[in-house]
Image 1: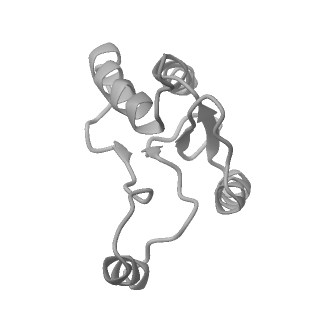
Image 2: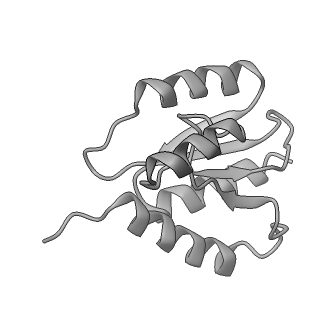
Image 3: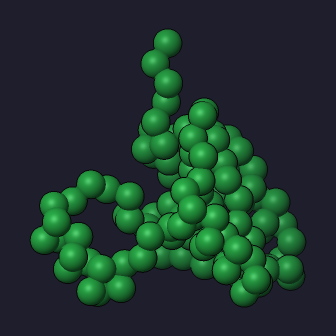
Length: 119
């Protein structure tokens, strides 16, 4: 059996979350496309434009009673955070956001539901 990639898990998540949780404004739940491989020129241009390493895969830009926003980092079965991702997590949590690591679409949908139920 082939191991599912982070991209596979995230794609499944977006298919499921849009079907299962209808009240999320479509522009406030989004993917941050930082992880793609790019050529050096494009990478340098994006860095000048403000792209930083370590930003999580998905953002839910809706506050609840406890947090300003929710960040979701998808990881495959044996995946682990980079140094930059750990630094981002620390800064986001210190600033009042929730940060979770999810290894399945189901887990991420569950996190969104729980987060939104704290409104």
